[in-house]
Length: 296
Image (cartoon, rainbow, N blue to C red):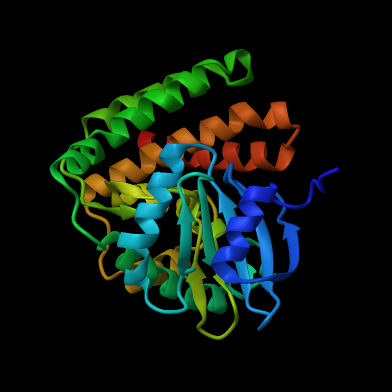
């Protein structure tokens, strides 16, 4: 009988052929990504790794591309290193990063400013990594429109869980998003940045989870930050952009408001389904603030 905590035998055999005999193997709790991840410890030197399987060939290809062509720009120790891939298993072997996921760390505002300044420098390096092909540039330019279409379909399906006034507001935001043009492009992280950041104290910050990375408008990477830690901490936001090396231009600021509003209404729609009153309360606060800004 197979152990449900272990990778399938062929996958485990490939991992040991790549790394050598393993002393410990355990599954990691499911995260925001749909990937399956195991924590590995090598017997010979106690080095730590992650074995990650992608949910689809497209996800595997995208993440492999990110680790080979963009992530090295972050520098040694600032992101996992890719040690091996298997298209047959849709699997990647990565070095395991030290530290604690940033959302689990309690920091003073002064420490948050330090962390977000460092995060800004990392994200700037990622956004500037590589040059998109003509096809990638075309897809990146259409990304916000596709994002607006997907979110409005999702929110429209929420029915009476979202007030009609909010639905009307978010549809207007989506319409604005579709006509924004010439936004600066970059190789984005594509997932909530905070969840991908790991903090080891002092100035050591690293970034992981590149399964949604792609060329797209750079502003997409700032939505979860604007919705979360920046919402009532303008100095933390300013520290990030000091590290990032530039401020958002007028079109990017409009795009960020639209994207943040869409995210808020989506959270408002999903909150009752998940019985998550805190998420619904945060969404309501963010949405009311955005509506007030627009009306003024």
